[in-house]
Amino acid sequence: MTIEVITTDVLVVGGGTGGVAAALQAARRGAKTVLASEFSWLGGMLTAAGVAAPDGNELLAWQTGIWGAFLRSLQQRHPQGLDHAWVSFFTYEPQIGAAIFADWVQALSNLLWLPERYPLEVKKQGNAITAVRFADCLVPTRERPST
Image (tube, rainbow, N blue to C red):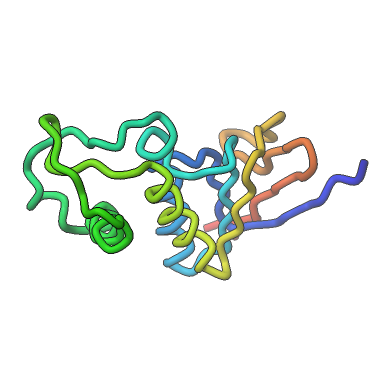
């Protein structure tokens, strides 16, 4: 079996909300970015574990950044509108949340999403991670010039 080598500036392993946010921000700042996720969907607990009623009842605090954009996208895409629940100001269909994250990731030409990839080996040089090996590919990060 041939192992593909994919060189990148930033490698994010994990497709939960934190991983997606990190990959989006790196790519938006111009870095060639790879996002590897164990599953075929993105968003972690917000989309796969059925936690489609985020904790909290202060909606105004959620209007900024990636979370605010996610909320606005949910409002636009959810056919019945966002439901109100006793633990949260809104609930939504998890697959709609996953589709939003996937659309955002796929819209960036310098962000490559590798779904269904589980890291098998981490290569290091000192304290720096230099590459991660998956079953079908090796993703080394580009060397940074010494300062």
